[in-house]
Image 1 (cartoon, rainbow, N blue to C red):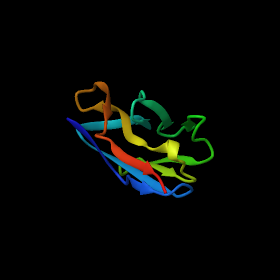
Image 2: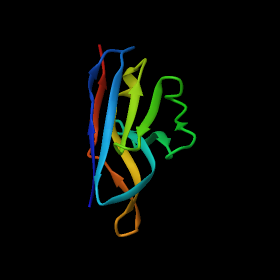
Image 3: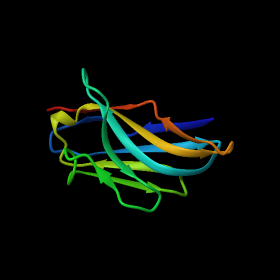
Image 4: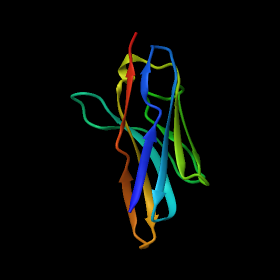
Length: 120
C-alpha cells in the first residue's frame, strides 16, 4: 500500500502565502510525476501543477508566476509554494503521485486533501 499525507493548508489573506507538503510512504520502488490538483465547491477537480523526477514543471495558467512546485526525491515529498493568493484559489488541494510499487505496478495515488481558504 502507498499513502500520501498532505499538510500545510489553512486560512490566508488575499496576497498572502501558504506552503503545502505531501509525503509519500509505503510500498514504493520509485515515484514518477508528482503533482497537485484542486477542487473548489461546486466545481470539478482541476490541475494545478506537476513535476517529473528531474524534468520540466508544468502549471495551470491560473497559477503561473504565483505558485511553485518542488520535490525532494530523497524524502519522497512534493511541495507547493503558493504566493499572492487570491480568493479564487480557495479549494481543497490534493496531491497525486504516479508510483512504481514493490509489485512492479505503476499506479496513481491521491492524498486525502487539504483545505486552503483565502479570505480577508
